[in-house]
Amino acid sequence: MILMLALVSGLFFLRFSCDKKDQNKPTAGFGMLSGLNSDRFIKVGGVVYFASQCFATEPYTVTWFFTGGNPATSTDRWPIVTYNTAGSFAVKICVTDTYGMDCLEQTDYIVVSNTKDIIATHY
Image (tube, rainbow, N blue to C red):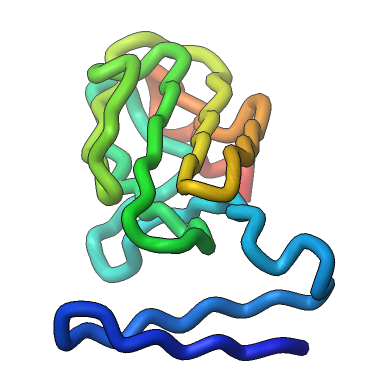
């Protein structure tokens, strides 16, 4: 594994890579912010706190796509999304830096239900 450390404007940036050939290529990833009661299985009107887990070289941008969510897209690294319709919804994130772009999409990632009982059966 290669570990690169750069000092830019007084800030440290760490970049990890397993393949020397593609060490600069960005890698898309996401999750949910912990400690905020964020969950993949929510009731209608529920909120999900997403977190970018992308590896990229600064400066970089992220673009989110939330099927069924409000907002439907975002460029925030930690967006907050509300789901007002029952169903199963995809989440997609793309990260872009000077070395390229990478996207990750998870289908049926968010499950929204009208009743708490249905949500409990997903655990």
